Image (cartoon, rainbow over all chains, first blue to last red; front, side):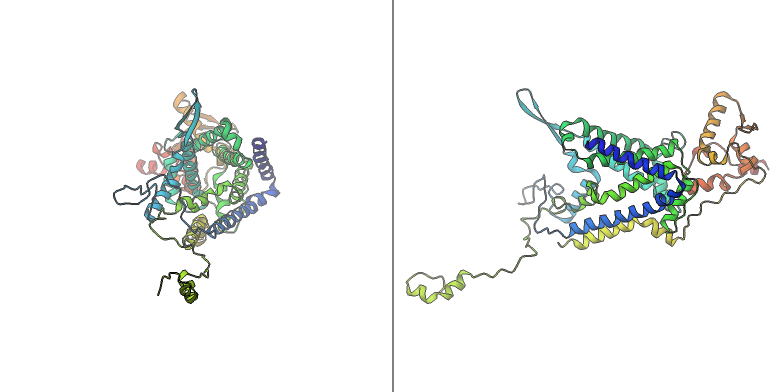
Length: 330
Length: 132
């Protein structure tokens, strides 16, 4: 039900967007109202989540590390896996955000005949995740050509690199293939591995189907249905300068793509896709492992009223001395 | 706790980057008006309907290329019965559209498309100039 529910939800959104996009009277709603609303929800929602996270107390260093902590000078410490300085933390975060270092350590365990527990490497998830995320980044940056005029050099450069093989016209983008392949791998893995399937929720499938829908509608629009790219850019530019005007010749396929992208944008702040911001704010990753090097005082320590032994002794000094008991101070 | 300044700066940077197209286009006075194409003066009818050409001219040109290269036939009969010589520079450019920068490049630059046509084919003006 989780699987089919997510599939039906994405199909229903696509169908609704496509039908509404083919009705002239509904096009302004779908082409102007929905994108503005979705972007507002994305920006406000994302900021709200990050601000809420920033307000949670982090009184103590809780990094989860897998390297030697810095200690005595003759014990070699791991600067990247168990960083004790800000520079090390930046390096560790860089590896995590850009190369998914922790996923690279993914292992698999199975019980062999014997019975014997066997651990092994499992790098495919890392490879699939890398392929998907990097392709998505390139695809998003390539879309700069629609929203910025004149087209920025980075978009032109990425466009040339991505269409390097010059297959067909319009030129086939390598990231289109990689993105679809990676998403399909991630979906098939979720369905075929019993343990992963068991813990999969509606949101896991929904995010995958939504991204697949976006990628497929984009590919369909570019290579097969062939949407008028100039009209798309006219709409996009008019939206960015807040004087929206809807060109006439936009096809329903464009509205399917746009509707799915808007769904993703509005859904992102309330879903597991917030890991986009959350990875930077993970206390188990972004804190230096210097618990022993530095004294970390709880910043909201309440000033507790204490009564020390010395004060107690002063208070009862005569009585203690009269009873013949030893005192610290004479 | 002490990282709030850093977190809020990074958040502001992210928001600035996401909304960069708006800042850039507003300050550069970009409008939603599309590219201006110089239309042919001596012809009213293209080889195919305008709506088709607008989105799918590349398919027509690729079909032309494959027909010419593989079969050697250069005759193209349009829907209206008119015959054309399947050739990019002599037919499309020199008979109607003129120099590529006045027609092709207007939309291609706008949409950041750089088709490989011109790796082999010559521009109309360049041909005329060298002929003089």
